[in-house]
Image 1: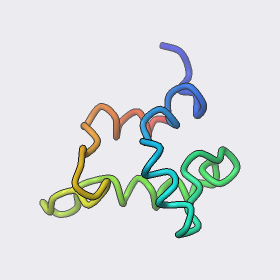
Image 2 (image 1 turned 30 degrees about the horizontal axis):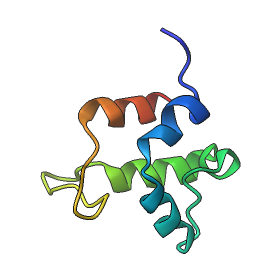
Image 3 (image 1 turned 120 degrees about the vertical axis):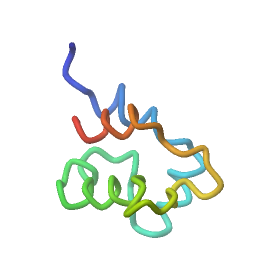
Image 4 (image 1 turned 30 degrees about the vertical axis):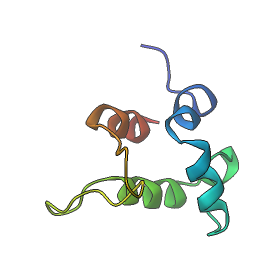
Length: 76
């Protein structure tokens, strides 16, 4: 299996509307430098993941990431 690529695999998971929405909050979902910081990536993953049997919060109104998409992001 090829190594997970931020440009090829990860940015494709984010819809343009969510990228633009999060920029105003200082979260650069499409910026490798920002996202390659483990602290930033971990915060994004936690936000995207269901927590303590609670429904997912991101992206508002869905579609929510699948378990495979979350695993791909975590692998990256």
